[in-house]
Each structure stands twice: as structure tokens, then as C-alpha cells.
Length: 470
Image 1 (cartoon, rainbow, N blue to C red):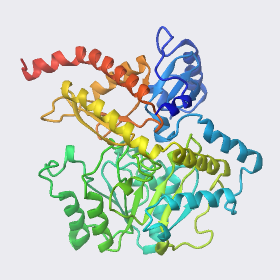
Image 2 (image 1 turned 90 degrees about the vertical axis):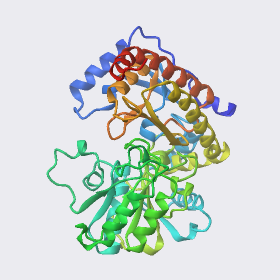
Image 3 (image 1 turned 90 degrees about the horizontal axis):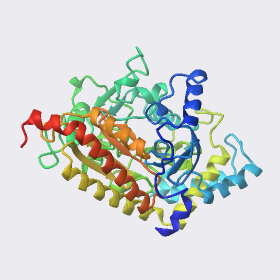
Image 4 (image 1 turned 60 degrees about the vertical axis):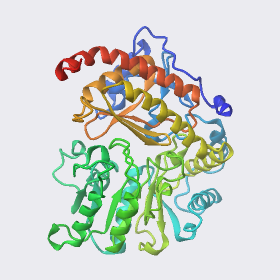
């Protein structure tokens, strides 16, 4: 869409430093290591110091331009520094910034916008509650509401799920890397398999699958000797993010919800990353016929990076009373204004349709690479939430994180930023701004192609020798 071009700093990468990181970035990275806590992570693999950003382009302090297919970890849905949204922000900053949970026109307009974006037949069944500034806050609130409503304590989560770093959110996150230093978090958390057809724990594939993962979940709830007491809720991402941008098989979510509701279990859909038009629709569950009881939101709702989070939940599970869940930084008025601006921008530029079409185009381009690369096992995604899984062998599907690590370094040197995830850190996760232009996509694809050629020289010959391919 030509109209979106003006919302970007440029439409391609531009590396002017003789090597990366550049000299000015090196100085700031060194200072950061000396005075900021060691939990800093992103600059370890993307070592730059950022000066400014606009749209899908980041400029570092050395003047290098990078294509941002990382999107601030899925936050910058309408791009960096979108002027359209900033107009709403500037107007709100003058009038009111902090209002606790008092009613304001600003906030109530946003709630109405959110509810009106739900399917028409269920709009009147839901209400909205804001939490602290992060997705983890929304997860904590959702768990609390489910427990209060049901009077039960347990939660069932899903393998590959990521829900945040606070105690409750981390407890329902499956990646043990984040949890192995803690002897306890919140109790009574159980995990069941997610619909990950490429690596099905029941040794099925998308053709032979009979939803064994759903049957296993149902057996757990049906059987007194499963060892799992009836939980308050289940929590899952309708399209997994950190787990590897995993798209579940069609029909999976509907069946999971049906089983849960049969047993009086509340269904929480974590749409922190998949929400706010990331997959084309307002929320990913709207691409299905599954209807959750609670939806958590954050990340992209702030439009251009303003922190906001909350719950969209059914009125019939309203169980908490006044002050049962509080927080000083609920509903920051500037973040709410940014969300309103982002909503209006998406409406005016028809980004809902555009995100689907540009996402389809990107996936099509990536799948042409899959054919020629023996190490690309799977390309998957919806809208602008795409995963590429790298393997040593397409038959055995042995993970190949070493290849992806090298590929990431090569892409970085050419000006492309992306995140790595997946069960084995072997998935290239692409979550660029929804306003990314076709020219930027083409530039990113060229960088990936060039980087693949370099990586093939290092890894293909050993692979050919090992597998005796002629």
C-alpha cells in the first residue's frame, strides 16, 4: 500500500559502519554492561544502541538502518513513532495523564471500541477491565478471576506456552529455562500438549491426526485417577508466540473449549501477542469458532509501544468485588489515547485486510526458500506472525539451532532484526509491524537469501557428507 510508505524512515536496510556494532554503539553497549543489570538480553544478540525509529526501520547511533522484523517483541503493530497515533498522545498528555481507575471519556471510548470489535453476536456478553502495564499483569488478573469465580485452585496450561515473568504467569509458562532456578511458584499447575502438528507428541501428522491431544486433555478431566483435580481454568495462546509461532490445527481450539466447558472449567485465551490485528483479525480467536471466557490483551494494544494491558471477559463470570484487584498504573490515560489512535489508524487504512494480505505475501516468499533449503523444516503463520523452523534433516526433524544462530548473525550484519524462539530455539520468529510495506518485505527477503547462501557454505557440505547425498 503506497499510502503507508510515509510512515517509515526508509524502505530498506542501510549499513554504513565498516562492522557491527558500530563504534558509537560499542561505547553505549559497554557503558550499559557496566551500569545496568545483567538481565539485559536483547542487545546480546542484536548489539546496537538505538537512536530513533520510524515504521519498520530502526536507526542506531552510528546511522545504520535496520529492518525491524522483531517489532519490539510484537508490540509495534502500527509501527515505530507513527505520527497519526502521536497526535492522540500529544493531545492527551496536555489534558490528563494519570487517573487511577476513575472514569474518563478517553477510557470509556476505548472500552467501547474494544467491545465493538468483537463478533456482533457476542459483543453484549463481555466487559473490559484494565490491569497493570504489562501482559503478565493481565495473566495474573485472569488467573485470579477464574479462581474467585470457581472456588478452585488449579490451572491447566499447555506445552510451548509463554505467559510472562511474574510468579503466576511464569508458573503457567512451559519453558523450564525460565523456571529452573525456582523451587516454587504458584502451586497446582499442570501441562498438557498443544496442537503442534510438526512435532506431535503422539507421533501423528496433520493428515493422520485425530486430535489425540484433545482426547488426552479430555481424559485428564474425565478420569479421577489422572492425578489432576478439576482446575479453575485452562490458559492457552490461540496461536503460540514464544513457543515458535505455532498455528494449531483447524478445529483444535473449538474442541478444547468444548471439553473445558463440559467440565465447568473457565477458558482463558492469552492474546497478548496474537491480538490487536497481529493475525489479521482483531483477535486471533475470531479466526475460529472457539469462544473463550477471558481474553488477556497487552503489547500491540498500545499501538506504538505504550504500555497497556487488561482483560475482556464474559459478564457471567464477574466474581470479584470492588478493590478485589487493584493497581496504581491501571489505565494510564496516555496509553489509552495511543490505543484509540491505533484503532482509528487501523480503521482508516484498512490495516485488518492489509495485515492478512502482506502476511500471506511474506509467507509465500518464505515458502519458496523452503523448497531450496534442506534445513528449513516448516514455514507457518497467520498475518504478520510467522515462524520458520530449522532442522538438520527434514525426515528426522532434528532441531538445528546452530544454523539459525549463524543465520541470525548474518542477517544482523546485513540489517535485518528478528527474534528466535521455539521449543529448541530453532525457530525464526517474524513479528514485524503490520504496516510493513511490500518493498520492505522484499528487502528483508533478499537479506535472508544472502544470509542463507553464507550459512549453506558452512553447513551444507558437512550435511551432505553425513547423509551421503549425491
